[in-house]
Length: 475
Image 1 (cartoon, rainbow, N blue to C red):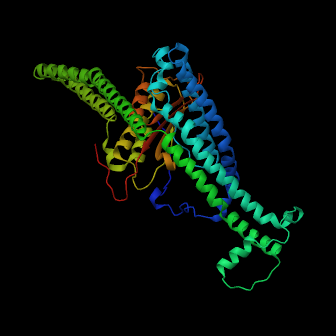
Image 2: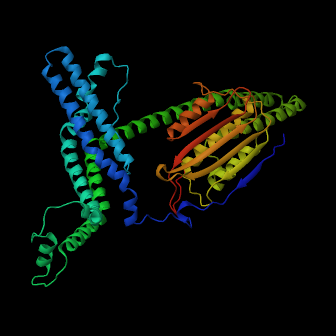
């Protein structure tokens, strides 16, 4: 059956060879001023929130401790821990709003919910994060907030009062009369001993205050940034997640991925065993019987032996075709010799349904061999499923890579058909096996197949690009 295979291969340069790169951000004094309003709002609200938290937490916690000999006193202590968690979370949200980098929060529900009511209620007692949040709300935050709030108020008052005092001070009676003590005069005499400067004391005092106000105003962004950073450092150390928790999650994810990969490989081997048993093995048995019959008839009935020989030749050809088809589940020579793009074109060309192929891959073979092999298998399986079950008249295969920055490089493989739809990831079926394989690679399989079609299946697989000149290991 004829196929219609249209291929588009875009020669995209590797990420390392990009001609334009994002310029690093440079420090700018005016960029500090851009965040001054948010940092000021954060600092000015810090002490009221901290004092409120101190009052609420000290009241509830001390009340619970005082009534600990009664049953409901324990619940009050638990409630105080949850309240501390709320105030700590509010601090993290406020820091994020003030422009600080997001702080990873603790994983509060690390165990299954089906652990019973009492274990769920008393879980905060054995979770160190709750006690750290309580310590932050009752001791650390009130002390630090009083200091930062006082500095904020004092620095802002001097900066604004000094730079604007020459406008409004003239309207406020100071009651100093003809006194001889002026602050500007003391500073001038200290800086320039024996000077003969003679200016109006009020003018000199106003000018001195204006200069001090300008100095404080110029340093205002640095002070606000430093105070906000102080709160941020404390919050990261006390309210943030521990590094051990991140390692635990990483180990759990790796264990799950490894288990999924092992299950996928086991399912693939079982299917291969079944296919070999039901296909080539039966044909080889038939071929052996035909050869035995030819051996018996070759002397007494050469004509009949010749006919059986033709049938045996056909059996051998069909067996070879089936073995070749089964071997496509592994790494075929065309994939190893010519790369993923050409191998996918070959798979699409063999489809009895026309396949439109759109491939956008780097020209420098930056994909590891493991990723290429699994992508080839996934594409071949999806095309086979579409041919067998979709009742489609057309299929589209799209493959591309993308660099997401923080989350790394991804290979995106999409197969879309215009068939009857209704595909699902039911356990024991082909898509479920593919999902296990993709999850084993720490990827994601997306299926969109409403009844009536069309069906779109996407496999998103993360990978680490090979460095320039690095050779992918074959396996």
